[in-house]
Image (cartoon, rainbow, N blue to C red; front, side, top):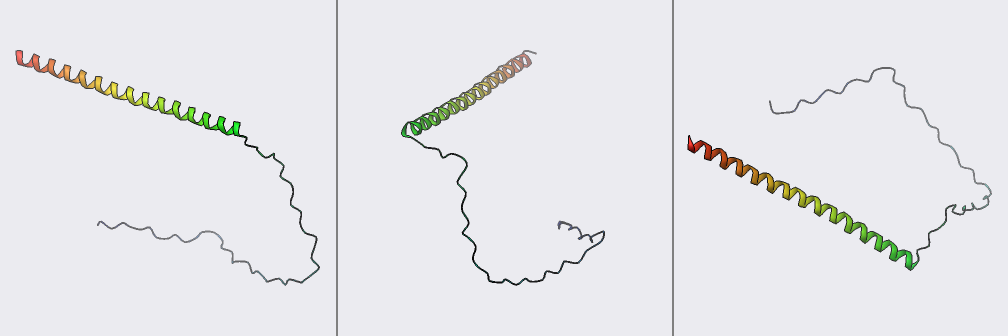
Length: 103
């Protein structure tokens, strides 16, 4: 009852072709060709100067600080919203209970 029912493997439909026969080829030694030349890279290389490295570090730090400030402000907004909803629930509950006790 608690064992999973495994599906049966379906049989392939359509025509089934047998695998192709691969015949080995012989390698004949010959004269070595000219060595292959490696093409030069087409994109320019990036030179990282100390000023550029300092700018990258400063930019990364600024991004981290901005993202951190946004996340902290969102967390604070959620916390304030939750606290205000909780206070509203307490006030409504006390009003309902006070009204019920008067009757």
